[in-house]
Amino acid sequence: MTLKQKENIIGYSFVLPTLVGFFCFSLGPMLSVIVLSFFSWDLWTLPRFVGFNNYKALLHDVHFLNTFKNTLIFVGGVVTLEIIVGLFIAVLIEQKRYRFLKSGFRTVYFFPYVISSVAIALVWHFLLNPDLGVINYYLGKIGIPRINWLFSSHWARVSVIVVEVWKNIGFYVVVFLAGLQNIPKQLYEAAEVDGANRRQQFFHITLPLLSPTFFFLSVIGFINAFQIFDTPFVLTRGGPGGATRTIAVYIYETGFRFFRMGYAATLACILFACIALLTLVQFIVSRKWVFYR
Image 1 (cartoon, rainbow, N blue to C red):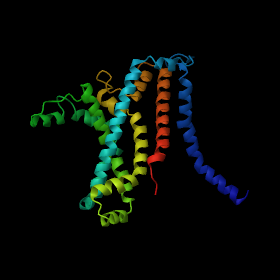
Image 2: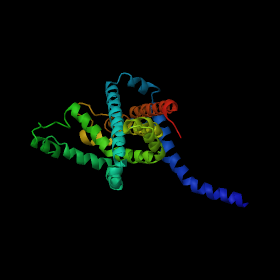
Image 3: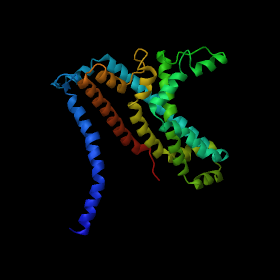
Image 4: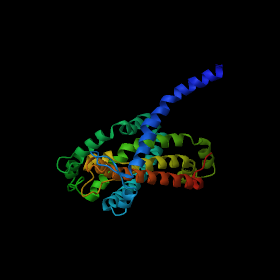
């Protein structure tokens, strides 16, 4: 055996565990879900092949259409706020007058991102409790009537969006800070010499050069937002009246509450197809607005 062959074997031995894990825990389950979507299975009896009946049933499933609408609302609200608020905080921290606070603020904002989503949702469930919650308590102190955060369709959606944004905003701040630090300072100095003010510098230098960062965060944000599960499930159990039931929550309820595993697999396939299609569109459109230096 030659030295090159030995090196190849060593290299493959390092890669092999990852490949085995990918095929066993990612690709394998994914393919099994696709196959299961063509069957009817209640976990207790043998799976029964039904062809495309599960997919046809989606067209007449009112609950699916409502959950899809809810998911789109959450996707639009969460991703938009995460990008806008994340950029605002990052730009604020990057200012010279606040630069000495950068490391501390970066840690504080990123901390919720590494905490369990269930733990965060449980804490917010207590804070948003209409009767015993801290938020309504202090709102009452300043004369604002109590808000039914978790049992009103409108406010329940707002609560889920706010909690989801609060949980993920640290990741966006850190990534935007990295993007801002990657912009050459000479560009701002040259713009100042030419008489450009802060607003002009922001729109003509900062935003265009942050386009790769916007693209990355938008792709990640849409993928994560389409799969929102923990926050609405813990806060409201998908209620009230299904107002916060997302596709991910509906998949869980269909499979593990009503034991319609085949139909749940169909929903999962549709969710995967939506995410894949949207990501593909984002990559195609990015050629027109993302600029790499």
